[in-house]
Length: 117
Image 1 (tube, rainbow, N blue to C red):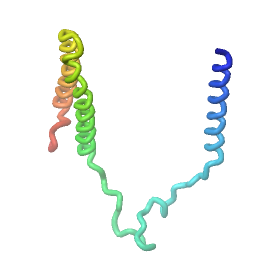
Image 2: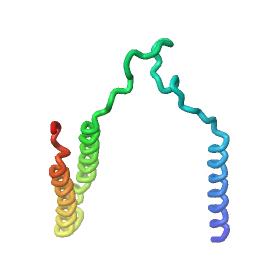
Image 3: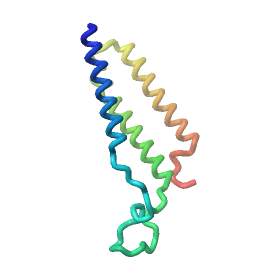
Image 4: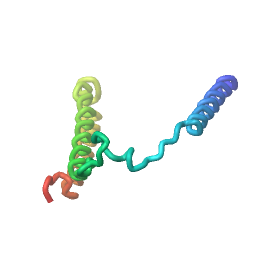
């Protein structure tokens, strides 16, 4: 047991030393005006290439991803119906669906599901 602990300690120490050395030895790149500007054949750009991103579109995307993951979590519940106790299965399923519905209600109350405000 002591040998295993010593090996783990040595591995953690070596990995931390390597990470520290990589931070010290890494090439630093300073952001300047030319690196931040888009490349247009050597000419100055006529307009900003970085258009503002719609925060509302981002929120809708995150909500979609959350519900997509929740659907992936619901699928394994269906085959478990025949394998486990029905009362336990129904309690767990209803609890999970209640959490999802509370999240949907909260998003609805915060007006996150309305595209136009």
